[in-house]
Length: 245
Image (cartoon, rainbow, N blue to C red; front, top):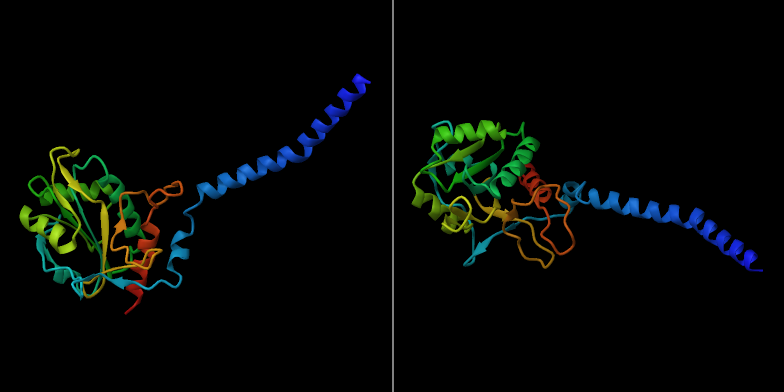
């Protein structure tokens, strides 16, 4: 009798293995595929039905104040050069060892989306202008794949750049001996419309997100509750502004 019992148990286990285990494996593989492609198509999904808000400060639309600096080609560039264009603004420094390489890689991908579009631009303001001369910035542009004609790496008087960051955009930037590289900055991107107003979409609670996270890789796979990549929604929102003429 015992032998028959063992045989019966063995048959049950065998049948279970044949029928159930492959299904479990398929489900696990399916989850892995979904997880690894979680951000695929985000740009397309993100663009549907989205309206972009103005950033309001004291009841007025937040507009980028006038600025004038020198770019990587030695040309003087001001806010007037961006009039009539949609552009992304960031604050960085060329020797940044932490978030800047991620930010730059993200922006190069954005640049490639708008490669043939003269109505789009990027303004990258150096927060270490003493080191980041036009020649240094030119070398940096060549090294990092910056090719768009309207992507200007800008340098000038330190206090003017810090004032533009902290008061003009409200994007923190400053010297910090405790920070790697000696400077601290937020890693955010600002989206600016053709008239110079800062724009953004709303969050899940109906409030403007104000700025877009630039320091998370575009296709990063993150866990629920962690900060999500926002480069695809930035591209979608920039396209919307470019197409709204």
